[in-house]
Image (tube, rainbow, N blue to C red; front, side, top):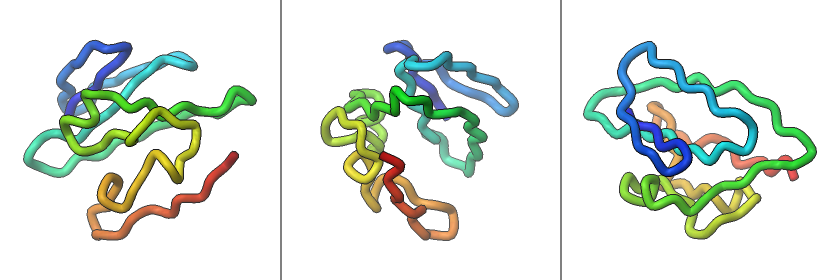
Length: 94
């Protein structure tokens, strides 16, 4: 698993903790051979959220086609897949 925070890529190991203050550009990618789990906790304030078209995520097949604030536009069924093979719902909290 790897994370890119503000343009710097870092490998992650079991039990690593990553804290990203609000509006810190970050991408988390399960880039290893085995399963991984990520617990992400946050609150979306009135400023919303921005999905970047990050090259780091693109190398792992997980990037938005272009920078957007729409979850529906940022994701596709080929990007986010659960271990069961189901794609999570794409409700847009706009």
